Each structure stands twice: as C-alpha cells, then as structure tokens.
Image 1 (cartoon, rainbow, N blue to C red):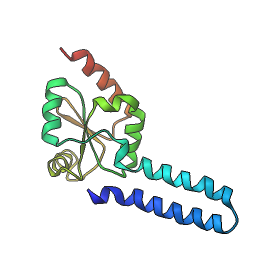
Image 2: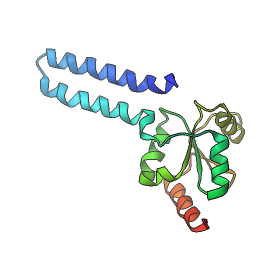
Image 3: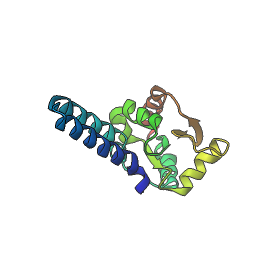
Image 4: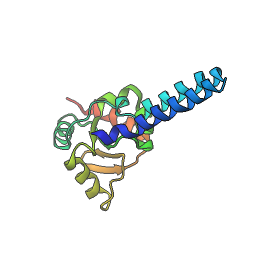
Length: 149
C-alpha cells in the first residue's frame, strides 16, 4: 500500500522545495504557479483518482453477473491514468483491481500477458485485452448496460 504513495509524496516534496526556493529567490509568482502544478501532478498520480479497488475474485464474480469490464491497474501507471480519465464518470461502473494490493489480480495479469504485469489489462467476458483504447472500453460499458436484465 505504501509504494502507491511514493511518487505522489515525492512530487509534493519536490514541488514544495522548488516553490520555496523560488519564493526565497524573490519570485513569488513563479512559486505560486509551480506549487499547484506539482500538487496537481501528485493528485493525478495518486490512487485517489481511481474508484475503490476490489479483489480480483470479487471483481470477476461481479463481472460474470453484470457483464461489466474488470480493469487491472496499478498506481503511477500513465496508461491506467489515461484510461481512468478518458472513461470519465463511466469509470465508476467498471470493476477496478489494484494489482499491487491483490496478489491474485497480479497473477491474473501475468497469466494474460506472458508473465508480465502489463497494465491496464481489461477483462471483458473473461477475455483479456492489454492496454485497450479507452473508447473501446466505453463501448464495452455501453453494451454491458444493454445486456443487463
């Protein structure tokens, strides 16, 4: 759990140091721009932008019932962040599994990707899709809503 927060904390600390340096060098305007930029980067790279993760077994069971995709992800992955942002509000309807918090999720990703923990790996109807186009994932969400009883 702690390693998910390493990058955001480093960004906050570096941003604070850079902003303080700029402020004390007589550039308060630059400091006022840099600090929020670093804080925004820390926020985007934190687990906070993702819906609550669940265990792989629970996600796969829910997906079998409701037909929604299961996304295996990890904090700090730029492709996972891109998928999350491009899904918008629809991201809440996807089942998210953090492979750093769930060993079974990491094993499922390795099994689907020749032993590599390549994320995001999206399972739709039990079939893995590695780093799919976010538009395609949105289509799968739409079609799962149509299939729901």
